[in-house]
Image (cartoon, rainbow, N blue to C red; front, side, top):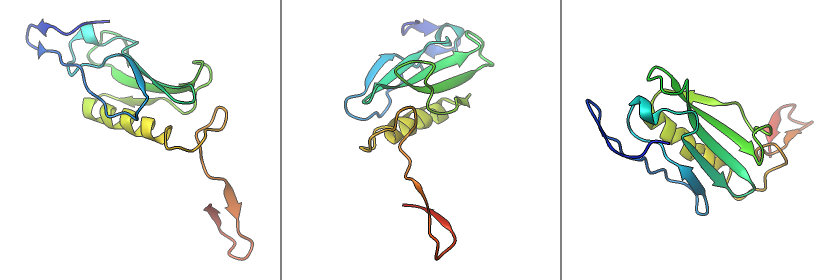
Length: 132
């Protein structure tokens, strides 16, 4: 993983500070630069309560034309909790990581392998479907 330094034509790289829930553990960092040295497959991993992880990478590695990829999984990479999110924009990445972390730490228990979602209830008298 790259470390902060100055790069010709790109200025100093600064690690981004994410607003994450209390207790989140961060390994690695994302930098506000498109210098290829900072664009690798494994940039940052956020560990949340409940053994939930948010992984941030860049694909393809070292290619400034690539995209950030956000993957959410429980314990094991094979137990992905939602579709990968892609973005090229650093501010969009920050918003997506922070929103994802908040969604998985809202205090509700997570069902095994799935985010917490209220059950779908059919109300016979109204004939419509609403979340309770």
